[in-house]
Image (cartoon, helix red, strand yellow):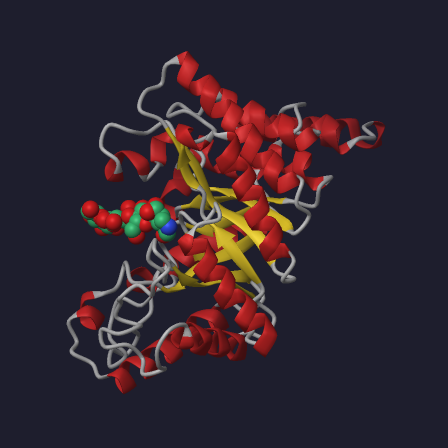
Length: 356
Ligand code: G3I
């Protein structure tokens, strides 16, 4: 931050003699967001409002990324912690702080997520509601949250992770436990996309999932749903491919399958976002970091080579604050900056893939 302020003061002092905007940035090196501009790709990251107080965190977030997305603060449990009988069931504090930060720094905001089986508040999980009551709760939730962020959040992960790996429907509180009474198969997903479109007709509406990068049973099921929705005019704008991967993804067959998969979705006229990219490692040896960098470069290239791939987003940006060690014991080091906010080889690899 200090450097940026000094640079800004220097700029004021020199005034019009500085022609290029590059000359007054804190560092003369191209940032990720600058490198991505030529391809019209938005570079995003998941973020948390409590971390904005860390100077390195907010400086990197503001300068390197053109988009942020709340890692947790717009999820049902965080944003709607109290039942609708409460005078104020919602808590927009964390989400609002992130939106304000983004606006100050000329970044766009992606919303995550309206319908998911995870992060549900106790009052909902244990409420013993009927299908009808749950449908009403969910419709009102979608309306309230989307209207609160209308014109501030340009795209939403409306539904997250609704399929099992074998392509069947995941059994969840929204589908069948007890569900919202919309019917079998993807009917409930269709219903919530329609509610979302009513709530904010200007927002882009996404279906988001993991392990659907390659052509497999899960991505086939998502593809069939997307094809059906497009044919029948259900308001679906795009698919989010989470891309939580490890080094074993660096396999020509897997990489080619990812590219082919994106291509078939793009032919449906859908926008494609890589939404939660990270590449977990089991150690931080130089060789591992180099292999990780290579794979970051290849994934970036897949997005660059597929024009409907408009967003490349990592799930956080510093190993200091990543979900991986908590969820995969013994693993970590998955992101672009290390835990002391130093750029890793993966950062350089992503940037150079964007500069091609
Ligand atoms: O905020 C509470 C805190 O008050 C409490 O003291 C603490 C004790 O464990 O928990 C805190 O909440 C944690 C929250 O992250 C915020 O740090 C939850 O336990 C923890 O389960 C939650 O994990 C998040 C996870 O989704 C589940 O919601 C991860 O941070 C987040 O990275 C992860 O993100 C998901 C995407 O939403 C969907 N795709 C997969 C991705 C990775 O799992």
